[in-house]
Image (cartoon, rainbow over all chains, first blue to last red; front, side):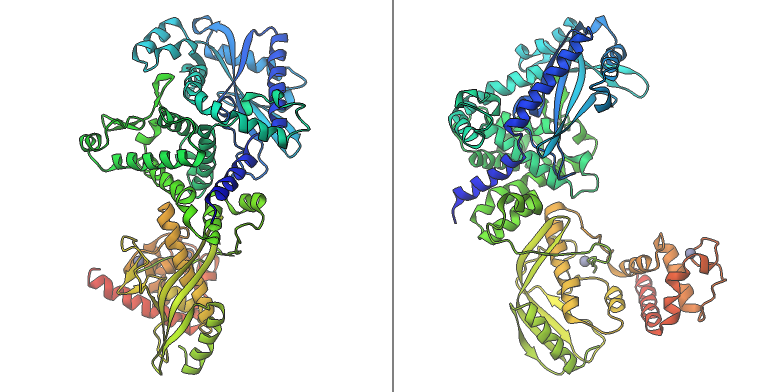
Length: 402
Length: 221
Ligand SMILES: [Zn+2]
Ligand SMILES: [Zn+2]
């Protein structure tokens, strides 16, 4: 069997879920129009992407709906300091501007903490833009954060966003720009490595969109770090869909991003996608021992393992751009969350690393379990000799007894 | 209960679909099959395609149900439903007996119980949850089987209904429903209780199970 070919075929599935260059162009245009509209309403603000659109790790969330569009997240940072306004006022300012628009009013969904503008399909899929209103965080809060921060230089871009408490809005500190700066700092050398190949491939596949290779935006480049994040996010979506409360217990994307980037820090930037995935899932298997080993034994057995920590019996994954933000907060409310998380990590290794030594049929079967049968046949067709399986009807299915 | 002729016919039907199995022993008491069982099933978009080495024993001319032995220790013994004795924990005999009340079918039994057993095992190993639920060990699992069959919401009320069926010999739709709802049977669980009055074979299975439950409860299991 040809391992390299299998790796390329797996990447094809991820590319299939990634944002297309046409869609990217369109999303850029749409969010800039939105920013211009707000300006025309007298709102002075910066609109910038956060989350997967900013990090280059977008995947279409097809598990809950095969035709789902892309969810893109943006911050609308009004030119004001936290002390100039209240969270409720800020929210109202943006809400009023959007609802009064002929263009956006009908496309708008109002949530507690953000506004979603949903656009019609372009080609096969649609997309939606999530807007979180924000102001500049106060100097006092920033000074305080700088004291505790592992990367004090990142703090200056901190923002405050309205957070809904049971009956009032309060401020919550966030720092997407700082996070992006941290992410880029580690990812850039990996990006440089993949850029030449990436852009030639994009150009070959999209010659109707770009007149020359120089026109391709660097934001469409995908480093091994970005690919590994995309693989993990999609595998997570499929894996956790099997649990009745999967949406509540699955690791948030920020956890995946942070773990991958922290672990990749210091690694040879020319590493391939699957070597990096192998390395990260092997590391995660080590961290899984934190569940059973007493802390002292763990740290003497495995020195310098600080990505997922236990402090005062609490799980901790620090947000590098916000020292107040423990990304693993939820893990401490429900023991099953870390347990299922490490179970998931070992399944990723089994499905996407160990499967390379299996027969074609077994490989296909494992990947169908990992990414879903429909997705795999959409991209692979009949490759690796699939054998249709007979479905089990749940209603009267046998329950083990004895 | 299978006669020897029935058993031979059903075995040859099974060997046509499970070509990795072959007859390793055939007598008036039992037929044994050995070899690789191919499981190729999917549920919730998760497929299992694997071969398992098994020995399958089909008792002939007896009330005993067929059973499966894991001859090569493929089932991890930390799995909560590995074996009772050496037999794989397929389902309660109650479920199987009722399913095949009009005649046993070996091919269907292998598909619905043996293949589903291995599927459940793989699913549990991966996700740590049972795709179709599980039965408690011992008689509690048998009571749960009746709870499902009779559509009752808890085990205690299920035992009340089982006792009622076993002691009241004629169906009385106007009686208070033994599930404790205070409604009449006919406007409550009548639909599920009635079959036990219309089919004496069903009733016999329930009577036997109830006796077994009493016996196990007495032994404090
Ligand atoms: Zn069991
Ligand atoms: Zn009732």
